[in-house]
Length: 445
Image: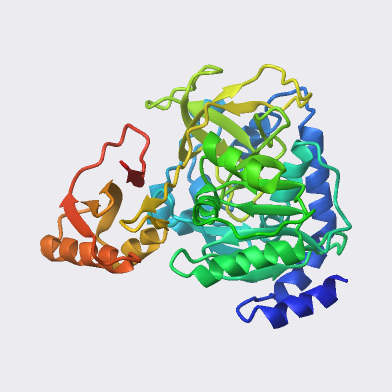
């Protein structure tokens, strides 16, 4: 069934790719994936809040991570976990090789990049087993957290909506349906219709995307004839899910909306339970909340989220500052899960801009365009002042001699990337505050 449908999809969607080499490698890690999934379900009922904390500290003190140059240079004998140094995103951007294992061959790992929603993309390397964990398990974990039974009947396990290429995944166990990801282009109505048609035709068990892309579909008016079909759930992740977007999705699709929190660097961090709380995957992560000085926050106190884990043996990140904010609640949850809850979450929020003709526009692709074209650029922010005026605020690592020329070029590149050209883009050099939550894209309308 899966192979037949795969052939049909590859014939119907010209841009759809299937990586047969990746699939063949993934079949070697079936047992690992099942162990990881079992560990996740067990972790939801753990009595100990953070089982990984002491294991991570012992790994540093015992030299088990000395195959990573960064950890090999760390002193041994740390008295407590909180004595370990933090890792910033800019540390990895500046010196990526320091954080990658010297004992794992390139052919035994996978390279990727973060989405770059909070800054220049971070280069990431995954061990084989961790790569497939990140690839295949997030939706299964999120479904388990909310109490859904494993689905083996649907020919399409999930349909994802993204901004990159089109691809299809075959689960290595062949016990789950296909995962299909389709690109949606805000400037191209045909891509939106293609996604709509795929949902109606394939009837996926789950539909997954980011809130801003869901909003693009909803704002345009979905022309879907769902008939009797309802997905078991709509999965949202990648940014903050607003109450309004949740309600719109629930009303349109007629099913539960499940929120997830994760990062490209570390995979799924937390998933929502039936009562709407984000429960941390303690089988994979130790999560801290720290204040602006790096001091550990008390339970319930809001601060920056710091994540640690050992699962990715090629690039384990310990005390990694996410730049997202939230608080931890250790009290029992009515759902019965014992894992800590992430509350007052204020992570990445990616608004869509509204153009003069009322069209919604996702500014996220501007991140890679500007950082790739201007190596002197340290940080930037785009603020929609009105429907026809954007402010581009830029910060340079060091003042370049041709700063004004670069700023004029940046403004022109932003203007040319917009679906409507008759928009004023004002560019100014600034110094951003380092003490508050950074918001790359802001809309004031």
